[in-house]
Image (tube, rainbow, N blue to C red; front, side, top):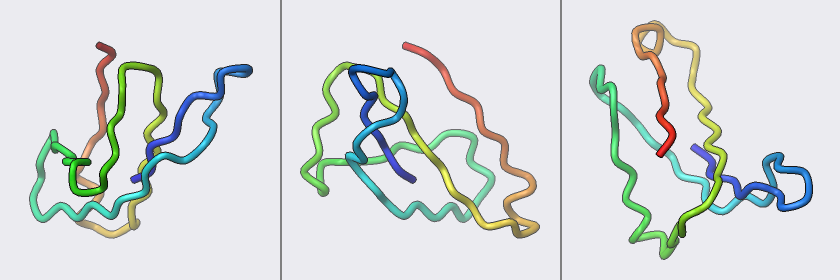
Length: 69
């Protein structure tokens, strides 16, 4: 998982703020990522989240959805 700041000029993904490996062992629809150990404080703003996953049978049952606060 990568969290990227929004570029102030273009609004496109900019600087990478956090890269973290996340391993799911179930069919969880939602997960919580604790950034405290990484000493990252994401203030209010616009961020992009990029998710990479392996194309294996387990991952075929997981769906992604998002919400805007």
